[in-house]
Image 1 (cartoon, one colour):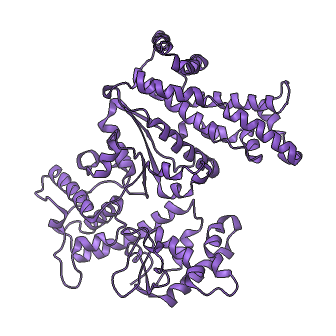
Image 2: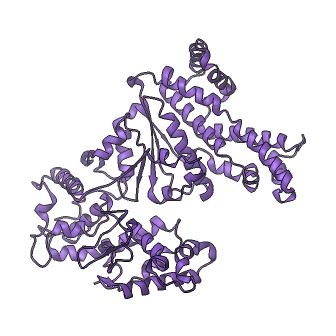
Image 3: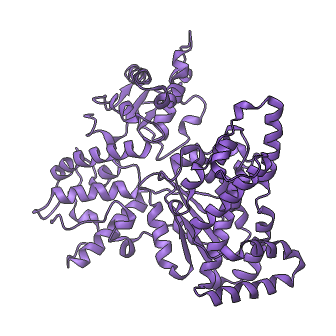
Length: 533
């Protein structure tokens, strides 16, 4: 074995084997299908979201648009005083976010479809499309949309976003009666204080500003969606994918990010009327859980129908890793065709080596690739991987996964690494008294951190502080369900094998499961890193 016998990188963007060894699954086929409505690809870190989108992009080079939120000047928007002012008044601005998304998407699709560069081609295109639209009286509003943005239509996306934002600022300024002077608009709006209004004045301003926000071209853009379907992407030959990734990065502050993602659901749903278009959005599980769909007039179920949860079975993962082994072996002129050929034999004490490895993953490609690479590295200079190599590799792998867990969740749950540390040295199979004691110790951590950082833990611990409360469901239920949901602990109602969220995400939602729980288990992925024997 050689450490150069590497089965791929942790990040899809830097994985040299992605093209040659990509595992074609039913989930990927659903992503690529223009007929399948599921387009929000949901999964935890390492579940294959970026790999799927990168593969989609490489397979459809002439029909792909990739949008990054960092390139849309969205941080510029949230820094504007007009949005801080409107938020202080609780003015609903979702219609503005929807208009913004639609405007960006419509323009990018049209630019990609016609590949126009020179000024003459730009002018000719606009005029020819106007001519086609004018023949249909029902598309008159779409013509107004083109006329309004004609002079700035071909600007870069961030410039168009700034223009729309400044237009809203001016309209809010006029509605607020600030008058005309030479002071910058943002400064004048910033000088307004919602606390200076009476209750009645605030209501009047909210109504007036809501009307301004709602006049954000949505009607015209909805007509443009018809034009997009019937006149622009009018055949499969002209089909288009739009990929939106990196929504988990720090491109805007948290509340605004949630508003933008919620609005994106609505926009993508509206764009499904375009037969030869698919907008594919990658979203981490924890971001989806933060979105308050309740503010969208009870449309949560409709939007959730757009979701594709990425999932992997042990058989899927075995096929994935064997494909990678075969590709690397061919490149290095080895005759190996699958991982099992370089793993040790199964025995009565240790069991099956592949099952041993899989049991220490959260059924994600990144986990399996990482563990396999650690095993190969440990076996460097020897012909095969032995059980000793696997045990040696497990510590580095486990420590890396624990750090990855922290990094995945720390933005949403600050201090979560301290909660995990509470389980250091825990029994492999915790009986209820030990488990509840460790849960109590975790709850007490909320007293050691600033309130803003421990809100989530305080909320999960509320039942434990209630006077006279003794039931497990009320005292510990929320925290147990949280640790189960994120894949850290599993449970069993008898002495049989434990159940984890990787196999049944809703196991603890069934009535009686919490009260009937007899044992708790930290997932084996983290055993070595937390000194769990």
